Amino acid sequence: MRARFRLSKLLPTTVILSGLLLSLATSAWGDQQDQRLNLAFAQLAKASSPQGVRVLESRIWQIWLEHPQPRINEMMRWGVEALNTQDYPTALKLFDSLVEAAPEFAEGWNKRATVRFLVGNYEGSIEDIRKTLALEPRHFGALSGLGMIHTNQERWFAAMAAFEQALRIHPHLIGVRHTINKLQQQLRKEST
Image (tube, rainbow, N blue to C red; front, side, top):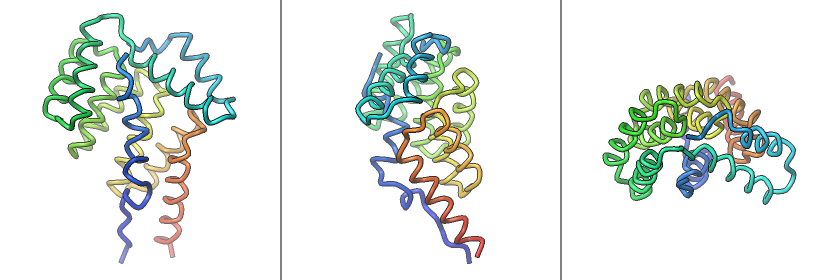
């Protein structure tokens, strides 16, 4: 009988959601071609101090959250507030409206993916993650979320692939590295 492997065994709840929800603390169209992103990602790859990593990661999230239209920023802010208070129906409505109004805004899709994940709509979340990644292939938060979904679905190889892709982009995701190790242990256990 195959051992049931739950995401909760991989990481504490705070770590599970931190990568996916890290951007909730910041409410600032992330133009994916923005040269600030290219610079921040280049610096992130070379960063050696935890503080430097946090600053660069925060800068990336801030750029992703920027949109030139104040109305879109306002919708994002309201959606994040609803998400933070666990008012998922309101958050979902706001992010539905946001992606309709600004379909080129990768972070709008990512936020809706987050809400869908939290309410257990994994297929909807995966669909939104694909949209996010089509617009911003370096979105390590979306890739981490995809790994979490695949883990919850016990799709170990797909989960590892998503987490490994996130690590290639952001090599300092300690929780993701830990999760990959746990998944590898689980796969070894199941193969014996």
